[in-house]
Image 1 (cartoon, rainbow, N blue to C red):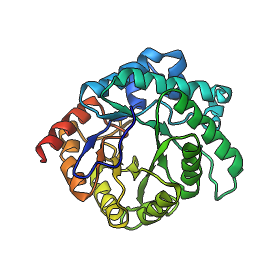
Image 2: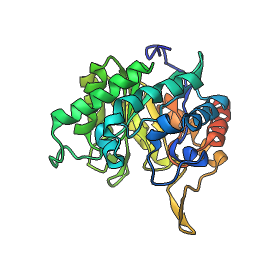
Image 3: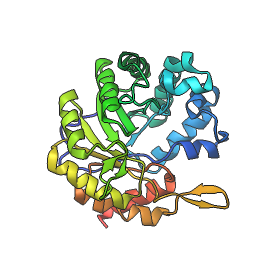
Length: 291
């Protein structure tokens, strides 16, 4: 379905939650490639996508966060990049049905542009290959998410736009004195400027911190752009328990921040690391009540 970004004033759109940890519950071995499940375990991918549709997500993503040639080469799957993206889009579209929108997930390459770890043209080509695969699979919006470097997300956004996709720019904040900068020192003000330059449909933040830290980020965005704002916080800051990484916020505590995020300017609200369908279900209730 084609998503209308132009008529969202006063609306709140519920998105989905984490994918990686949910795929592990479907049998994905920690340390293996989640994106490869699109080819070797599509039933697991469908199960995760449907779990979010069933609790009320109005937008779900695709299982393609790492699916550029650069992201997949560590797993020996670089040559499967296009196929993995096509299939990832198809699976989420299958789960979504007619009433739920599918936005493609495009994540960072793992290379730092400013450190000259990658040729910008090669990086653009890799993102373009990914975006074309996603477009063939049936999506028309890409969320460039979990980026920490403004230079890289601009390359990804331009590639996605060249493939005919609308683009949402979502970086990971949590650094700086007040937690409103990325690890590379970029701010919402700078992101808003890039969004205008590349013709983005929305801007936002995901991962890196719990929902309370996203409130000042959303406020800064709202001060510097009229675009819809996308937020997907983690379920709190991770802690170690018995050798495992655990995200401490339960569904109700996490969901309690939903109305505060909307009040700060957010339009799209969902969850990132540590969130589950239960978190999204609780968020749906909290957003509907406004409390």
